[in-house]
Length: 141
Image 1 (cartoon, helix red, strand yellow):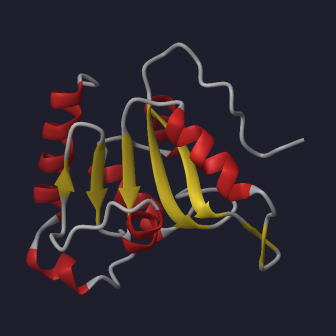
Image 2 (cartoon, one colour):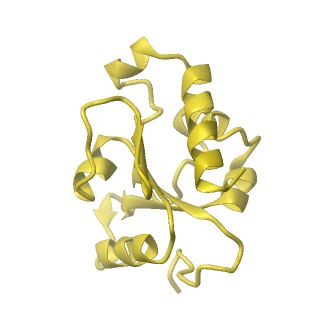
């Protein structure tokens, strides 16, 4: 049985694509920071507003075969996509030189790990306000 459920339910949700890992943004400092940007308290709260996946799904250090097709299928199944981190943005051809960007379908955010030096120039509150504004524009808030 696949980890991901590809049946996109009827509730309007957007997709968040991270970089790597088996369970995106679940239990890490990056996950805590990302959840704060989306103004949700915990992992269940994040899953209640968005579908989650990663560019690379790793289990025991190996990338799962066929995962790229599943991610593309998820992207094709939703109206809006948030690409978190440079890897996700480059993989799906949407990388911009600015820290945060959006258009009618995509939003790009820096990776929340803190290793991104661009994050030194903006605050978490500014990112949270930006995310809130885009989600309002897209009709999720």
